[in-house]
Length: 101
Image 1: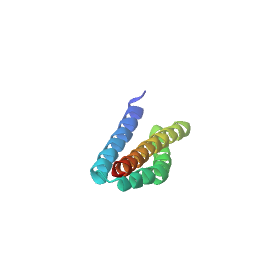
Image 2: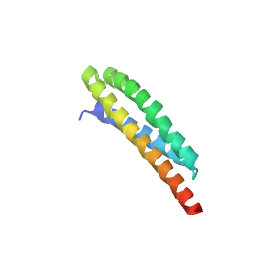
Image 3: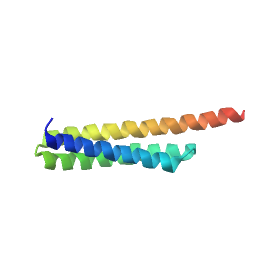
């Protein structure tokens, strides 16, 4: 892995880490906010990361195929992250509903 690729992946990893920290602080214990955050990241964030990551990495690395693969990888990772947040919100809502009965 070249230094440029390592820098690109570390920037994406830090961006994803800070996004998760922000969501945890924003959502707190509210299931509705977890579900909303997961859906926004899955449906909006993953496509933005896919296109922007692919274009920027293609320009930065100088190879269109590498940029496309980086965009796909970043987009899938962001989609999985949003899916995990969505599932966490759904399970949190079910736990709350089950404890009432």
